[in-house]
Length: 431
Image (cartoon, rainbow, N blue to C red; front, side, top):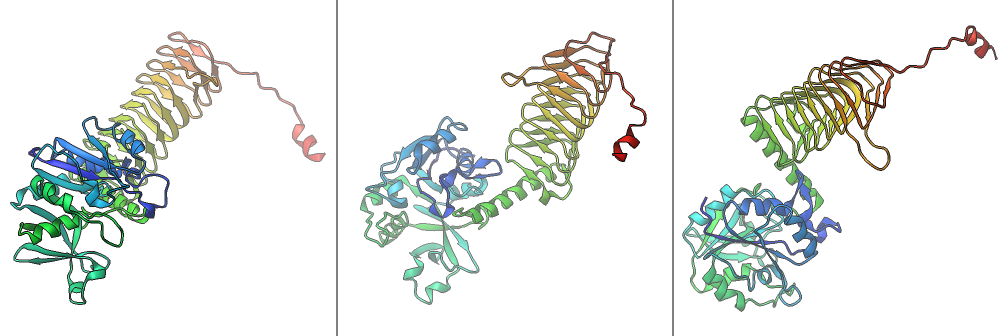
């Protein structure tokens, strides 16, 4: 895509209908803030992106610079120039064409936004056809040009029958903005400066205003937590459809949750109830029912059911089963069938981890590593007290506490002799 266009993203509002102390554009869907998606798609179209902030501006800016290092941030003069028109005043852009987006539209896609630049017009205005257009500003179109934008409160009964409504995204030429932004008035019920008034002023002076009919789903704004949930469902559907087209098998995809940056490659299978969170990379693997994986790499492995892989782990040709938890560990060719915790560990191929095994990696102050070599058999109910190294070809007996290094070829065993008290059962219950 060509990038000789400028983009302004409006993200200054309080979002009071979200009923939250968090700024609206920082509410997340599929693991990322809504504003992240607007910027991400805009970057496919432009090398000149300006984000307009006001409410909790520092918080929003700090969050976005975690992802992007080449965005211009400006603070709206909200006290003197509130409203969407006021938001774009005095912004100097690099290119002649300026696309104005909203930071609360996380479902927009660059492919559809590119259509704005394919239309030769002074202003391109996005519009949507709705079966029920009540509550929206109507857009009167004649001879393929926008004639008028009519607010519902000002619409006649005939105008209220119009099904075409304003979708809220515009493409302006810089010359139009330079000419009409200074002419905006806040003489209205809200006392705000509206970007739609630029359209009306330009139309009155004979400028060409072209409508662009867009998909309602892509231009869905989020104004409440109900809207947020609806947007999440749409995003999740898109993510899983993309993976299925690339060859991934999903069992009951509607029951799974996948963050937007997750990578799934090869002939992978994702069963019902699986959660894959930010930073995950799944390659040629089978993730079984109700397992959770966070910021980890799973390669040629099977996980679960009911397993959890926490951040910083890499599993290769490994099987972990039900109720096994792995954290910040590298496992290569390992089997851990059930009921184990493997944290801060490195475990090599051919090793079997028995049920109930725990790497005791934390002493209350610091975390320590456990290293286990090749072809090691760890018996059930074993505690491995880190830091410790278990060499290749070792057997650890069930119930053992390993608190020092074990040399190659050894058997590690620590057990208390079993004591028998004859006749105890009858004596105990008789009393």
